[in-house]
Picture 1 (cartoon, helix red, strand yellow):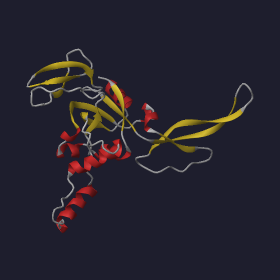
Picture 2 (cartoon, one colour; picture 1 turned 180 degrees about the vertical axis):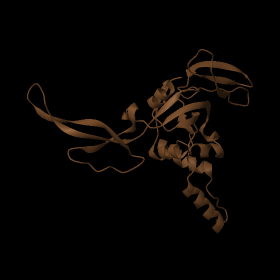
Picture 3 (cartoon, one colour; picture 1 turned 135 degrees about the vertical axis):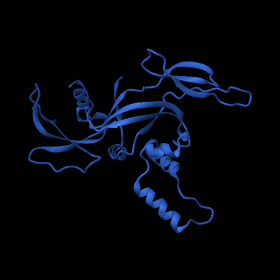
Picture 4 (cartoon, helix red, strand yellow; picture 1 turned 90 degrees about the vertical axis):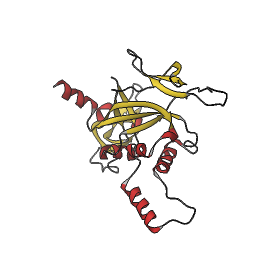
Length: 241
């Protein structure tokens, strides 16, 4: 079991908090070098195999149970705990500085008080204290409020995602469900179709990874996890008590 930071956007943080998100997909790097297994050009399967004593599962390439275990490992394993990094506001103040040459300057000194951007707009400052935006990549571990315990790891093509998986990804909102119901009730022009769940995930993925990223259909690591609404170190303290 390892503790690993993982970044989520504000909408996905809200989905975690709402209990709508129990899966995430991350691009597998590097992409597996697949090969044809017959004269028809059928490409090999890609899977995972976790050897006993090995901390991480490895990429497996083959067909019908026969194949090769590669040296490439994925970053995640069942039992890992992922502490969620998100964009935050952090309270602090600017203080006067003076270096050894006498040059005057200033630096920003943070406090331990934070607010989550997924929850609110920039809070109002008070006195000499201001709120400064901190990108998720720099959010400290102590500020994390969500811990994800990995329960399943698999490798698949991005477009293999099912409608059920899209819901588990937290991509479906009540607003979208209402829109689809309304669209179905009023009827659609001949030859048109109502957007389905996989279309929603297509748009979400493209918004995060750029134009053409869905059509590229990369291999991804699909994680299923259990959400604990607590700081990871608070969980450790509770378990030790």
